[in-house]
Image (tube, rainbow, N blue to C red; front, side):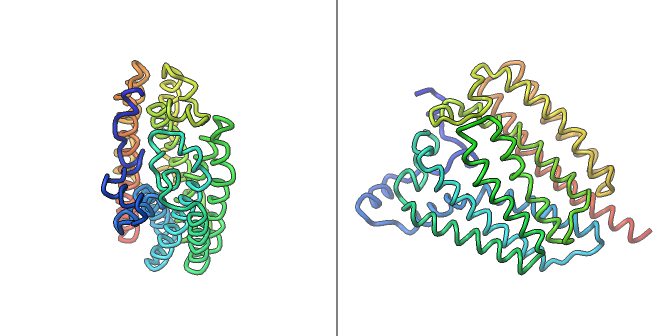
Length: 328
């Protein structure tokens, strides 16, 4: 086994392993309560889905600023509904991919391939969570938000998941689903989708390509073992991946200016956007010069810094723009 596969993956790439004592207890038929909760947290991808909720909140707050009022109760319902929906989607995704996960080093210890949770139980819980999430969005926010949530679920499970082993275009399809949370948040706040909402969608859509390609290149051997069709799997040298990383980071720069052009934010956001875009682009260019695992991890970390900083600047600057407009 290669050295890369022997290294423990960080939380956003792989989930925690069971301790020896817990594994012994599972083997004897006794489940420690901590292990049970950890397994379901892993199935629901709690930490990863926290990023989804942040995107929903950004969309909601930007939509609220656009219409000139904030309904904080609506934000709570939007976050609750999306949290349930995202958890259900994560459980159902792992149910559908349990056989593939069993083939990969970084995922074979997940609850389903490791046999710690029964597939039938995961299926039932996933369906219930997803339906509850859609119900909360319908009742607590707006029909459009629920419709977008249902569309995200359909794309994620019905298109992206099966396409992973069939075509490299799965990344494109997955990016569409992954960019929907800001639209869900915006529509939950306004009941509609104005053009500024789509600027948030395109930022998150474009951001996902370098983010996931960096991950896929790091774990290309694992993905190849499971038959995953990803560009980095077909590019062991990393040269094609490097060019794609740089090109998408270059396209992301003007896309990041969209909120300014549409009046959602001002100069402070623009300065932050230029700074984090430059860091992201430099990390991609450095990988292109010499594709190495350490440099791919740098691209990954740059992507993880880029989106939160950009959205925080958007919210902060957008609030300042709104306050200035009211007082003028």
